[in-house]
Amino acid sequence: MPIVQPFELSCGLKLSNRIVKASMEEMLGSGSFGLILTGNVQIDERYPGLMADMMIPSKDKIDIEKWKRYANVCQSHGTPAIVQIDHAGRQSPSGKRPFREPPIAPSPIPLSIGNNIFARTLRRLVISTPHEMTRAQIDEAVTKSVEAAEIMVKSDFAGVELHGSHGYLISSFLSPKTKKRNDEYGATSKDRMTFLFRIIDAIRAIVPQTFAAGVKLNSADFSTGALTEEEAHDQIRWIDEHGDIDFIEISGGTYEGFAMTGSEYDTGSERTKRREAYFIEFAAKVRKTTKIPLIVTGGFRTREGMNDAIRSDACDIVAIARPVCIEFNLPQILLDQNIADEDARALQYDIRGMSSTNFNRLK
Image 1: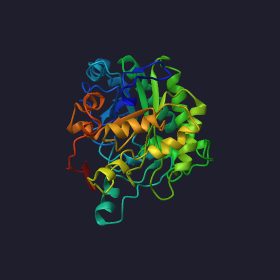
Image 2: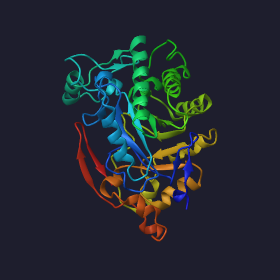
Image 3: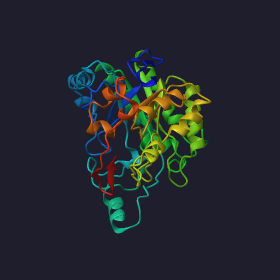
Image 4: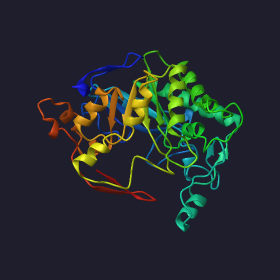
């Protein structure tokens, strides 16, 4: 059974199975996952993402002992944990900065969140038009990424994952919709990779060889004029050629057009199969041109679907998040070969969660 098989990353990190806890909540260390990916850890407290995100304080306020305790809790059951580090970029709301100080981004492209009164007010008061980053600000963002990785090394985490999807800062550099620069950071499609490559190289220069480094990328932005599937495919190929990355996690969407929380939630078994993995088809195409280990996140609900994804060589590892917030022991059920395939699946729930702009449901 593919999901029970161990897997080893190029840095030497060994996973006991192929099921990963995708970034969401930090209370699931005892669930028999092969790997834990933490939720967002923001590298710059001036530019938070969601208000509940963990943030790294300024360098003079960092308490390594607290981060060590965090690592110990995550890994107390023997599962390695990799920290997802992130800069929210243009999606950073007001609150931590002086009033009316804008967020930063590669280009001054505002979020397109609608034109009703609520959206216009939100855009004016909470998520304003970003300031185009200077070279000094770009350098600072690279430095803060390196400092974050250094903290995780000292805290005994197994690695870091660079959050390069969902419209955050790295993602903004990678997307033609949000990066309009004509300098070395974006004159061509490949130039848009420069910011990410600088971060990768700077981190690899200071971390041990056994410390894992991965990237979370969009398969597409699902927004008009934004990153296409073909461009995303090229970006993964360029990362593979660049080297020094142990895995790529495939996701998709931005705040403007999010793919992972669609508006249709049906219960039929055939429809469940059709939505089992939002990004598997893209991963299967990528696999033809790259051998870098691939993690696919989104939509997995059954053991059969997870096994099929790995067996078909579309990906090496599957990641789940929301289902285990309801059923903490779900990996144990999925990995138990004494449980029949038809019973090895996530529970069906319909839970509404309210955000500032919409209702998201879990099924």
